[in-house]
Length: 202
Image (cartoon, rainbow, N blue to C red):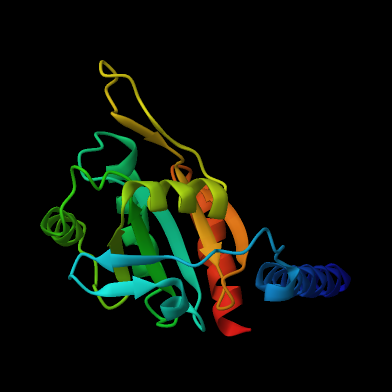
């Protein structure tokens, strides 16, 4: 009987410890949006979406959004990033306030029709995920000066004609940059999803 009582006590203690662990983990993983750093401010821009609609920076104010830079003839990085962006949109489907914005870095080659086709290929919901095209100098300035992400032309014999960052950027409703995440690393994408939820719910 004594052995049974000791076993029962041990089991209760173990269950209590497991329950406490779950509570602590939940509190740590939930966090608050105020814990996220402010890493810069997205400047004004005025581009055109794949649907031919004008989109300015101010149109995104009041909601959180995730940005990246892509182009349609990119052979490796961009398809992978766009697949991850599509997965993020699915993961965050219960956060309708979170938007997704892909800026095209190859406007001389990519028409709006090309971007519309690319959007459909990746299953983008145009109400949440938009592809924006602007003049080359404006896009390059936004990437480098606004988002602090490099975009440079490759050499003619390079497999990729344009070299650009593979990072996703989380932006809040005041156009403050709240985080950078490696778009090719599953762990980075998971952290981005969690941080986006925190921003959307705070």
